[in-house]
Amino acid sequence: MTSTQRVVLLLFIASLFAGLVSGSTFYYRIAYLWIFLYVGSWAMSRLALRGVEFQRTARSLRSQVGQIFEERYEVSNTSRLPRLWMEVRDESGLPGARGSQVLSLIGGNESRSYLVRTRLLERGVFPLGPTTIVSGDLFGLFQVSETYLAKDSLLVYPMMVDVEAFPSPIGWLSGGEALRRRTHQITPNAAGVRDYATGDPLNRIHWVSTARRNRLIVKEFELDPMAEVWIFVDASRFVQAYLPYTPYLQDDRDMWRPSLKIPLPPSTEEYAVSIAASLARFYIQRGRAVGLVSAGSTFQVLAAERGGRQMGKILESLALLRAQGKLPIQGLIEAEVKNLPRGSTVIVITPSTEDGALVSIELLGRRLMRPIAVLLNSISFGGSGGTDKLAQSLELLSVPVIQVGNGDDLSAVLSSTAASGLWV
Image (cartoon, rainbow, N blue to C red; front, side, top):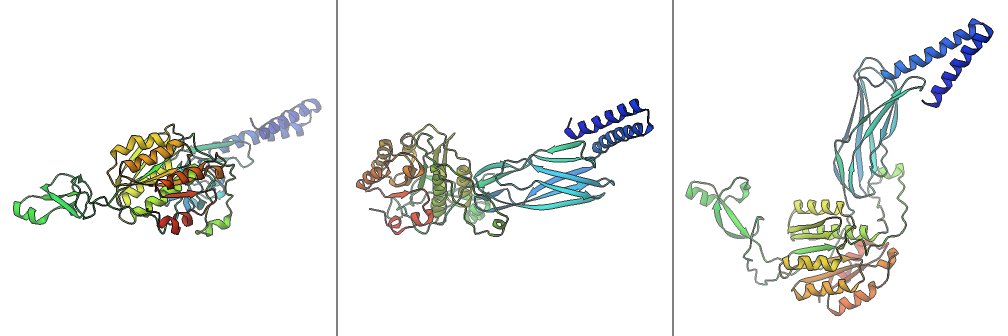
């Protein structure tokens, strides 16, 4: 029972008691008024949400940190009776969401809709709901609500920066000779033909052989000698560091500034994810095959592939990555190095300053890989020191090293002249 309901009941009891004491009919009439108000409000609230429909639609279910997410809320009154007021409560976990709003006087057979813009501040998956519709009687004595569960989820990709230049991997075979390994990708190296199988794309059909044999024949391909790029993200929780962070406070004017840059949280996890996404886009735009290895809450390996579909898989994996793993970077590299082809470029992104990181990167060189170390300066994120010492040791091994500190411009650091000429 709400406080307003208690007040009405107390007034009813007081009026009834005054009528019994004084014998005046005036107090009895006041008591009848209070009880009529109480019962009438209850009956009115029971009808408040009958014939009300709600719909919540998003323009896109995939976006990126820093972009503006648009969502439309629509409340429809399918009955003939008008609705005096309704409150829409957005109970989703999307940071900065502003979907909650109060609507007044919705006529019979009328719909009311409004558009909500939200600047995306965090990566991850956010259900678009639940959403609760609240209404009640004219005096606010009784409230009724109906909850609509989330039908869709928004996937927010990590923030990416433009990388103008970065070390380019060199193919292991210098003469353009094909590697004798079959692949489902379309490459310049055709290995042969075979009969068509259900699911084969039409652009792989070899029409000359099809006409000659009077049945569908498709081409098979082999990998070309271009080196693969593998990105290893250190997601061990024992080496992560972060500083206290005050979330960015949105302003209504931000919704009209699409180019506004949202600062990254001062966390090695967020910097590592953003760097990995930016470098993956850099290489895929240049036609390279890119793979991703991480061991956060789950161990995940994305095989090296090319194209926009691979970029989507990498971004989805990074959006869900949380640095809660127990496997250090040394164990991660040792577990996967035997599966990498010779000559691959391996980018190791880590805040670790332990000797294991040096040993694992040295192992890549002994396995005829081409390692690049992107070291997150842990001390700038509130962690332990030792990044400079590790960088010096790697440089003695002729391993390209890029250091990234808290607050650095990632685009400038990754695209710097030193970074573009790191090969020794």
